[in-house]
Length: 300
Image 1 (cartoon, one colour):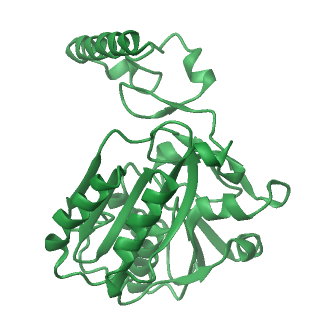
Image 2 (cartoon, rainbow, N blue to C red):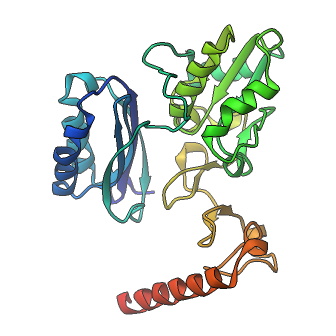
């Protein structure tokens, strides 16, 4: 991909006390719009979390704007590239949590697990005494994960505490290694597990995205693709775009094999949602697809 003519996609987060987070919304939204940036940034008392896309200059300007707040001066970000805009507009939202666990008492600003770099990750998860857990949701895990990792089969991050309480024991699982897309869910997951008495909790610094960026494919223990929350849908080693598309009916990633199913209707449903599709929703999806095709026709 020719990076000179592509959009920069930057993902960022930082857990830090922001009691004035609501006051930051309008200035941040206005600045992003001035720079032509699109994406979503979440603000909460516990910190900031977001993914934005735009030109090299625009993304750099927004990052500089964020870092002008001394509390965010060291905020880290990860970059990838897209040939087409991955977001339609810019949103800055005020939230109670920047990643929703549903337990406001869990605060990564107070305690968090041990960070493990991508270079050290393979050795850690190859240790038979380490329990490796994918903290992402089931539909994300299904298209790719680390070899030997446990799938909690959660539908939302809110279910993770229940998974821990029913399946893990601090007395049996002495060493636990957690990972997620960009690292943010693991900050909270590790903080939660430490509060539950787990002695050694590790998490992948920078998440799967950093691992795929830095670890050569021939040395990798990653299998499959990594789901991302933008129009790229999934990425592979080197953060190259993957092979999945999104079902317009349910929002799940679908493969070429899924599209070959008799339960796949383009723009309407896929094998994961076909059986639960009501006639009312079918009509709505058909109208959305009709409008989409009309828009494409007018643009060409």
